[in-house]
Length: 198
Image 1 (cartoon, rainbow, N blue to C red):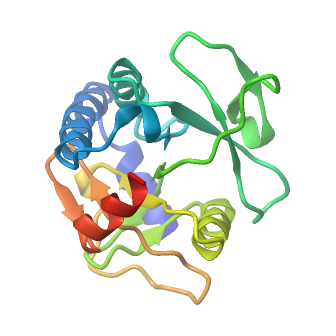
Image 2 (cartoon, one colour):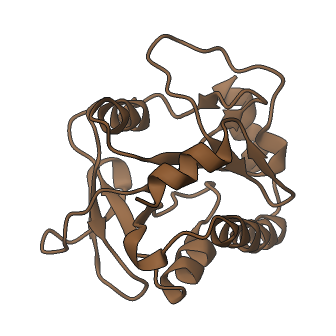
């Protein structure tokens, strides 16, 4: 399934992928603003996209412009929780594991209240197919297990939705997914975002 979905994603023309990224940014920002979140008190974690991944730079820039603290992940040992550092457009990035780009070590550590995850596929039950490293499942399990309020959202092209993603015991579900076409919610949005805003 990973091989097939990677091929589907990679087959998207660059112009279409860029247009989708902007459309997704507009939908995601509107969705979050509808929840009456206090931007200054709602850190949002995104990611520095790798080649082929949906580019969340337009969303990151839009959130930063609205006053949301924007964070990027820092990876440690495989399948361990990510940490997050404050990063805004224009700040420096340092090379990290697996070719990732990360905020520099002097950037402020901060826990996200909304965590946007990259993915290869997702289904209508909020099951996410990731890249197999286990970082995001470990991160969500750690945050949710510690009682920290976090809303988990996937960022995806609409063509990455499948009928069913096999779900394993350690897989953490998504609360919502934003595509260039729509926002799909899998948990009660009022519960998720009321806790995220506290």
